[in-house]
Length: 135
Image (cartoon, rainbow, N blue to C red; front, side):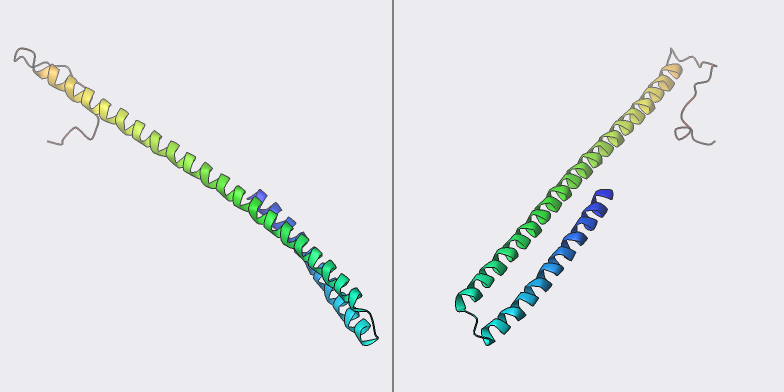
């Protein structure tokens, strides 16, 4: 979350730069119109246009780099989430298997106690509460 907030702050600064650059582009365009009215050369207009296109391409390149960086960050987060989810799933399966083995072991011990030559033993075996049925 902190990385996202930092990225948001950085993108806010970039947007401010872009806005100031676009406002300077607008000012240059107005100045260009005034020059054309006052007889400025066509070559000067083309130079200004080329400069504006160059600045636009720089801004576009920065935006694309930031977008790519954010995509990489999201992919890292997705991979970490998938890993954490798989670990949690494995733990749940392991706990279930351990629990089932405990139940099997207690049932086996219970059967052994009452199957020794038909004699009934007087000692008690502790069973899990979910195996003991109320009488």
